[in-house]
Image 1 (cartoon, one colour):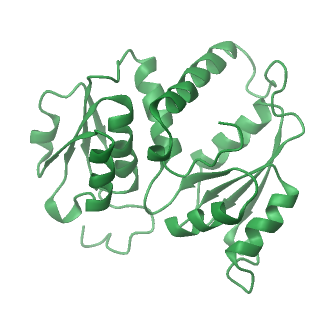
Image 2 (spheres, rainbow, N blue to C red):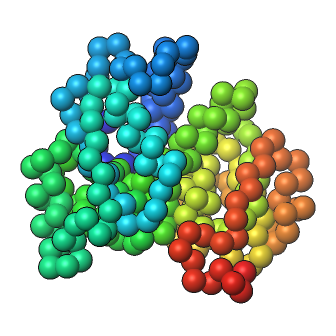
Length: 240
């Protein structure tokens, strides 16, 4: 995994994803009872810096990445769209190459998924998708870790998603085949997941079932995940 981008769950194989979760469980257990600001034994990221770029506002993503770097012995630098020249004369290519000289990795929370893909293409350091209009892989990995902490065995489980077939739903679908669970999506047809994401899920043997009501989706579910029908920055919010 060293030096790899993390743009979408479906880019990694099951063993790599499983390794991430297992390591996260072990590292969290090792910190039990510690002050939140204490650095992990061995300071695995000592001397390393993460750049965090935000086009969208953030609370949990910003604090979780920043605290993770602190706990691992590293540091982070945060910039919003208004702090940078990106979009005001500097291209994504230029920005990716310049930041790669200054930091060891970049996390981006962007409006357009293609911008993160382009940034990763030109960066010479790992790029992490912190949320785009298409996917939210880190959120889903954290959610799956939480389910396991509560005793859920992912392989063979039935998860129900009630809400917009949005970026978070898409990443759950991408994870279904990788971890061997069924995802039942309950949402009106006009808010159904994109066909492209359904195709990706099914190509990785993901078992996806679509329903137009919450009642149908949650029937027989081991876990129910509820989300808004109004995604962040969605101009269609009032009609929804």
